[in-house]
Image (cartoon, rainbow, N blue to C red; front, side, top):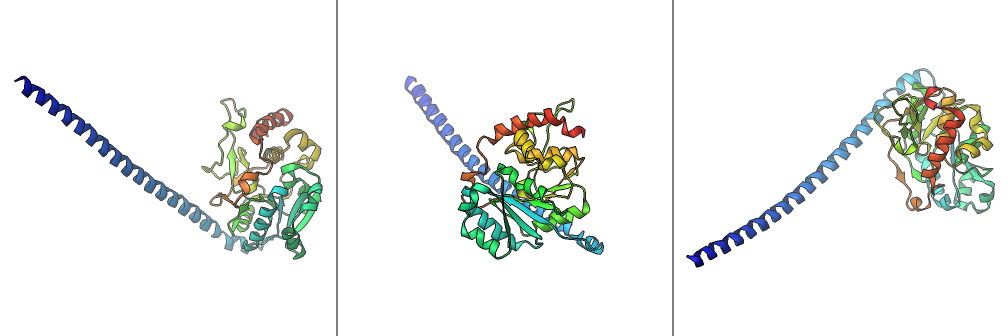
Length: 316
């Protein structure tokens, strides 16, 4: 009897061990299956998002006959800056702009005086061909993207881009379509949305809704991030926007904050351009970010300085 009990106990232990092992194997298979399904679901979700963006872009093209009927002026200029670590990427990015369906009146490349000597031939050849204009200027960091262009304002819309990106070949066209639909608004491919407390006070930059895509505006609480393609209508910014000394004092290397506050001081709203917010970086550019080091800290510090100087931008 004792031996039978011992045997049954042993079999029970073995059966339990078998069941545990079987459960683990089943759990592993289920986990793999779930992981595979999640991957498939994620791929489907990304495909649907891409299709939705494409549909939005096609929808915008439906406005073209209406706009053309009003005999629009499609003239605009492009403003871009760079620094030596990015010059090779700049040459690639500028050359790729030739594929844009709608071409600008001019592409102005603003380079710091001290960096002109190391500008590579690949960029100088683009100037010789007449495709770009290289302009030397004071070293304002990322502020060179727009401040010199504002000082040389030719009453044309200005589109800003970054030097490390490829762009969809219809970007400029869509920016200009939206410009004619919303002529007084800044049009941006990518935006952040400000976060506020219950009293309406602006919260720290780290709490803002980054790369916001739930509304299009025009709205006062959307801040354009200018590298992915942003169109500034003529006179959309307060005249202080081109004040180099003031920019350096309040917002050095946080140019997006600067443009946003100067837009709000003028009462200008921001509209998000749907369907063209994907960032396609040129290989190797993210290791040498343009004025990248410590920029998160600068955003917080400079946001506070701008709030002290100008007040709540949502109250303008």
